[in-house]
Length: 67
Image (cartoon, rainbow, N blue to C red; front, side):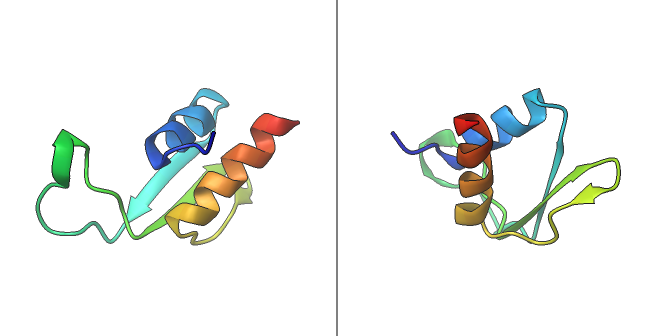
């Protein structure tokens, strides 16, 4: 089953990474979920993914979870 953006962020943060979102849309999304950013960065020490879109962030978390 594919991870949601919230699950991917939670997984990465549990592994000690800092996930920063950039460029949030105005207002809230439906179903009470927090609004998703348009771009993210995953940081830990000197590690920096650079800017990622949500699908790329999910892919990073999925690959890490598989190993």
